[in-house]
Length: 123
Image (cartoon, rainbow, N blue to C red):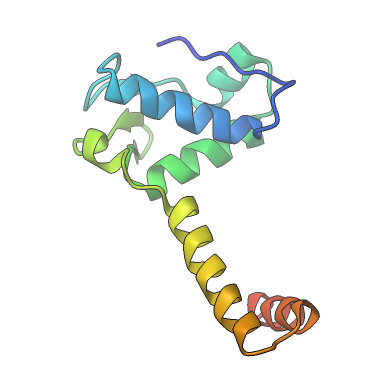
């Protein structure tokens, strides 16, 4: 699997990394049970910050595309191909978009929406 990060692209580096790992899994370039490089190793190979790789791995693990086995490393999840189709970011955006439309129809101002959202996120 070869990962190429484009620092000039508009999409964040972690998102590029997530997408490329998912694409490699879908194309069966990496398979269930295959090991992935450590966070530090991949960051060094790509010349990016460890935190960027850690964020990508955390999102992939959340989506059950990869799994971390204590002290043994990070591996492709057995259900990775199926789980690559899950896009929680897109799902969340659609839910928020629908809610904002509904609030605007009720004449709630954008400012009121932002204030309520910020308060709820700080709970």
